[in-house]
Image (tube, rainbow, N blue to C red; front, top):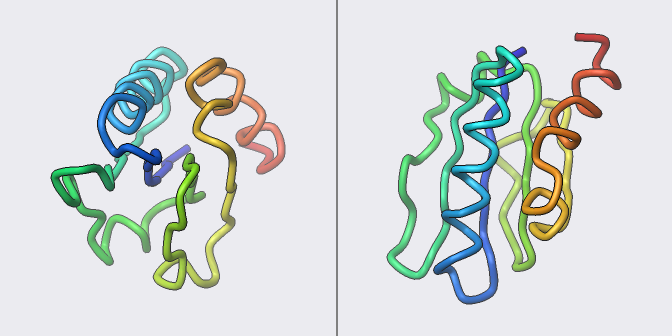
Length: 102
């Protein structure tokens, strides 16, 4: 399964980057491909390209601030609070895979 996503928290400091690392580690453990864009206090890091989005099976948005999702139109989108991804990244990814039949 190939996942792209965005992490973004209110302060744009700790949780944004911690959740990215947790999701990357969980995806690696599960054998999934993943690329996560962060929208933090220093701006956007690891921006998702149109090619990244086009080749993804699903888009995961883990946030507690507004994130523009227009560029993901037509893709399966999972929108969750950043706290859920922080507490249970592996569970989040396995639930997504199960729902997609992957």
